[in-house]
Length: 280
Image (cartoon, rainbow, N blue to C red):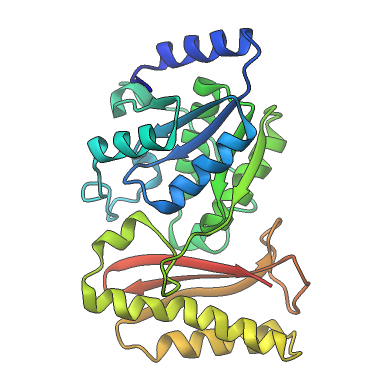
């Protein structure tokens, strides 16, 4: 496994691979890898000849009061996981390589990123679009894989790829969950055991909403009210949003459109921000 830390070396390596006719599959991550990331790597392996994983905690997607400094990092463990998983190249640049002194150019998608997380984290999607654009121009993949847990992010990236004419296929990997249903996330490492126990209620609430729909109720107001109530019963949990939107456009839906309705939520568990979603 090759570890690359500079933009120039990654670009020249990708060019050489493309010139040889290799199909590059790319998984962008912020590291602290878990089984969810590994499932995305497996998907990439099925769709490319060479798998590149980036490990980069992107500062431009964190707001001033967010958790950039304490975001979990373990490069040694991540590199071992990538090697075991059969990754060919890890691109792990330092911040100054991605954002050198004087950097002042940003990419912003202005529609799909506006609601949901975009409302509560106004700088987030500008940071995501900027770093993903840079990574695409550095790695030059044919295919890139994102996770369904970050459903809005995936939709924003797909739309950006279309708008900016990137010749990249975007694939979405299913959310991977713990045995009790909690969606896997690097931020789960923040949870103390008693918080972890309460955080499970988020997915349980989403399943309650799905059960209502399965009973024949397609009003999203009814479904969202049930989900919100179930989460709010736990004192430690505070709802940031629970919304029903079209999974591709992020537009709100009054009634469930089967196979296209994303029920998405963000919740504070004490001071820890967690997100999850299901598709109806």
